[in-house]
Amino acid sequence: MSIEIEMQRYLDQHAARSHHTARTYRNALTRFIAFLEEREIDLEGPISQLTIALARDFVTWLAAQRYRRHGADQQLSMRTRQLYAHAVSGYYKMLVLDGKLETTYGEYMALHEYMVKATSYKDAPIERKLPPDEVIDAVIEAALISPDLSGLDMRKQRRMRLIWLRDRAILLCLYSSGMRVGELVSLRRGDLDHDDQGAWVSGKGDRERFVRFSKHAWDSLVQYLTERHDEWVMGNVTQAPAFCRHDRPAGDHRRLPLGSLTVERTITKLARDTGVLERFNLTPHSFRHYFATRFLRHTRDLALTQDVLGHSSPQTTRIYAKTRKEDHIAAHEELFDNGGTGDE
Image: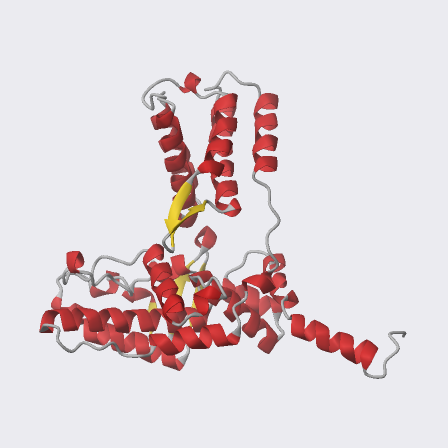
């Protein structure tokens, strides 16, 4: 079997877990293919070309990769490099276990340990990822401002208005639901729950759960969908994406969903226009952190927050119980500085 065929088999195995996992592994192998092509490895050639030394070199190669973000060249994040190395390590493991590589399992484990160590990092505390209230308020306020469409022809006016209505609904839905951006762009109109002002989303591990939107978010979403006039387009309306493209190449098809990168660019632009990008790196996931912290603080119910966020483990949700530096300081002052002795 060739390298390319075995890669597809590996992807097929992980695609069965969830489309999110499949996408991550596909991105990882796309990078690995680019790496192999730079070294003139024939993808249609035998598996024997894949050596332990080659996999080690891939980790070093990843560290040197750059991409454009906010007008500047940046490295791949440690988290991304870790995910990509993990995926390639898994690919090698499959080949070793299936007897496709002349490598012992012990040699593979040494490779795996090297890749883990080379891409290990200490994640920043969740509090540093939590946007201040004023950052969220400024970006949402900017998203609510209707654009000036004067001077545009009728067709472009309609397109630009739909983009504004869509982006406004996206911001408010992320803000009030805590859903992942991948879940949002995967929503179909048939997933919306009109009786209970929310939607059914498929999260990690294909776990389905209900998310609810605020009244403001729901009204904005309904207005956007109403003005889209999907009934003008042939096909099953329930299968149309809840948030679709309105750029010129998309035309009036209403069948091309947004990508996560488009949502990220929209939020980055709003953050830049409002001046908050200079003080906080706002991303779509920032809204999930913000929602989770507020929801847990309000309900004080870890299990409910876990269910709302779609976490498989309470340990993942528990990090949001440790994010209030202000609460820490207030309790400390009460204990030590306001007449307390600090002794029981």
